[in-house]
Image (cartoon, rainbow, N blue to C red; front, side, top):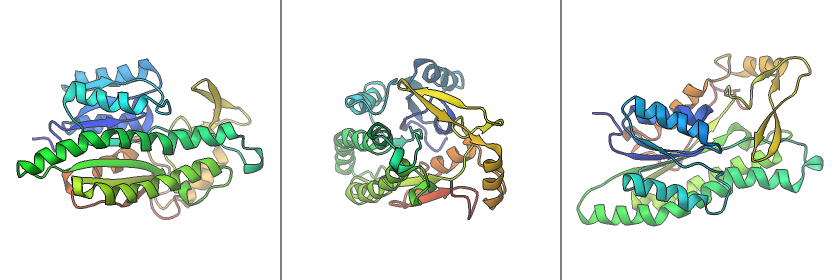
Length: 277
């Protein structure tokens, strides 16, 4: 039997990158997935991939920052699968600048995505999880549920990222708080802090070229100069950036039954000491 057979997992930002890998790995363990992406096509592709492998998945498309998204997201899980067992708050992006040049729009866009959205999702999920936990307790059953919030090595401070660093530090405080609040509901709440992981946001640039991605109507510059990647790789104990599949593996570890007595913790996934990014 698969380790997550029948469990219901919600993963934000799971149409691409690390989130996609998290969703696919959870599905391999038997979980039923609610897939989220800003765009319909990537979400539908992941749903189709999971279904083609014999799993179950549905899409809930839209921005995690929209005020009514959280309720729609959790209700998608309840409507299609009857409950919630795993929540992975993964969706995110960076929009960097030094503080004297950072606009209010840049600040709030990153705070809203990385900190406010997880707060709203967990708030919306609480009544559902609480009702299920009370029912299971009355039946004499202990059912462990999992929340994994995504942080970053940048939570310790990173030049040009006051917005991102603040959000990623904030999610660690929220993680510890929810671990205390939700322990009575038999929910493990942990975080994974990523170091340098290869994604479309950290792709190498050639020379002076500039790349952008469109995120909610904003053209956000992405990519890193190869020299910076080389220097960062030398600082990582394992000598290279991580792959999305490896980053996802750290998240899935905290969703499996083997982590049933782990809560309020942060797992650093950055290739060893020196891997902060």
